[in-house]
Image 1 (tube, rainbow, N blue to C red):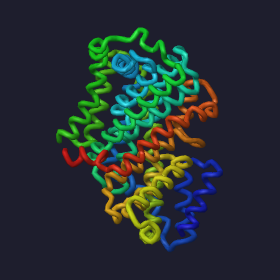
Image 2: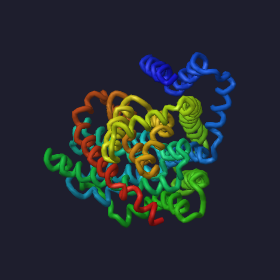
Image 3: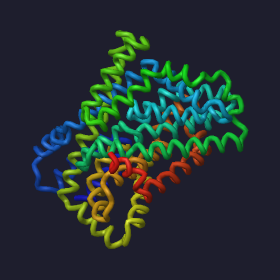
Image 4: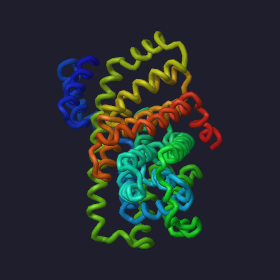
Length: 423
């Protein structure tokens, strides 16, 4: 059955069938022709896949990100980040990374981060003499922080599919997210100095106190969300609801950049995004049930133990596998299908499931900036108004930087786990 499922999935993906539909059809095909299960199991498993309290956080965080994107938060965060790092050569490129890091703690989505920040900073970088492909590439690679720094929708999905603590995953994402951001800032600084870009980036920068005052309400959101979770005030799911209420209040009352007439479109966009993710979760839950029923995790575990003698070699294999998967498969679907299979194998090697989850998410986040299906690349190219192919040459340097960070995260688990132990 496993071979039939894999083959049918590959064929459906090649035919460009939507991910959720492809997973659902492959699962029904496997049940019908390669098992004795009744088709009644399809709606049962689809329902149980969605019957999870932590999953309530997904639509709330998506809605909160939409509200903040439309509520004037992006511009204020850009001004604040620019006041911190924008006064030097390459300051706008560094501002892009820092702003994405802060906005990631609000949106939980890399695509939302790309559009919200890129709409401001890509034109600004181009106006300051950066080549358009370079500006778009810096934005796309920085925006992947949206799924690494908490709150993160992929982290919630991994936690639900592998029965791991959402709170521990959120804490574990802080160190890797900051590491990647710092390495990206160093990378763009060196890049700009070697190429001579960004010499006028300090023009019109605002003072730190003034920009901090203007961005105060925006900066308080991650403080409230993460502080509330880690302080034990509320759960991640409750924090998501609090984030929606706070974002709505800031957009309507404080910044007054959201009108009542804007709300239907904001809610519609959130519903569409939530529906797409939930459909993938539902069908992937059915597929995971069939995969586990077939005993594939046990087979893979035995194969891995026979071929990889150490954690080091196993993790290297996992990095290569997930890097390839991330190039072709949507992040949520990859986590839902592979997470329940690979996490138990990782545990058998003595790897903490939280650390493994971070390694998996960072790997799949790279898939968002790699051809042929990197969603961040397409989002950034859309904002920049250039074909995505023009970004490929500029992509090598940021991608190499993230790969270097990934190896540090993989083989130095303390980067992920130190805060979880301390908390």
